[in-house]
Image 1 (cartoon, helix red, strand yellow):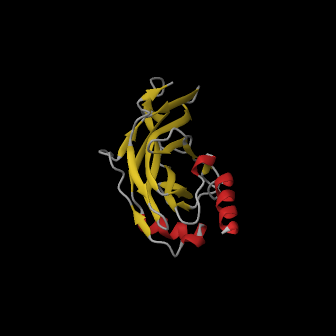
Image 2 (tube, one colour; image 1 turned 60 degrees about the horizontal axis):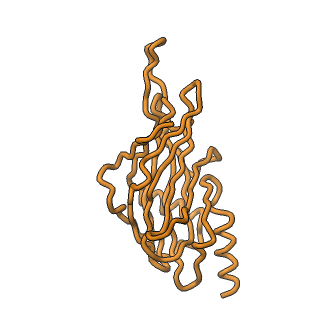
Image 3 (cartoon, helix red, strand yellow; image 1 turned 135 degrees about the vertical axis):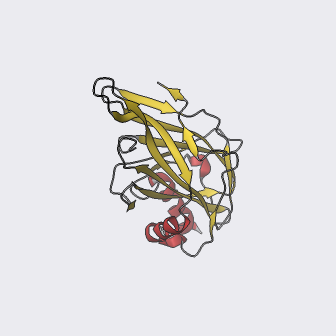
Length: 208
């Protein structure tokens, strides 16, 4: 029991495997009897001019009724998967069972001249449940840049403002989880609908 708690505590401090950086407050520490796992993938499109490769994506999650935020940040480290049009990383976190919500997504990018920051509203309210001894899979989040047009050159280019396409890559992401988190392989892998998500495209509405 003591060894299990130590392993979970180490996971919370260090975050996900390389590629997605996780910040999980101490208030989300769990024990052997109430621990479930949150899994998903965070990636970018690579096709010009809507490529998300120049964007950093940050996802904010919290337990319903709590203010402490779990923060997931994308990274430019070597990808866990890559195709002609997208690439990204798998993530998995041990969390106490209960109801959670993804409440905001933020993007940091560049419009070719200045650094720009864009985000969704702070009350997306996309809810899901984590159950003990199960892997809750919330799908993939694929970042693209909104496209702008150069008046000088009459060409399209990435604006630096972000958008996320949400869908599910169950087979691929389960294989990636088993590869990067082999201890979770025996647990049920449960694809979960994000309650409150009415459009698979989540676009930044606030721009700074």
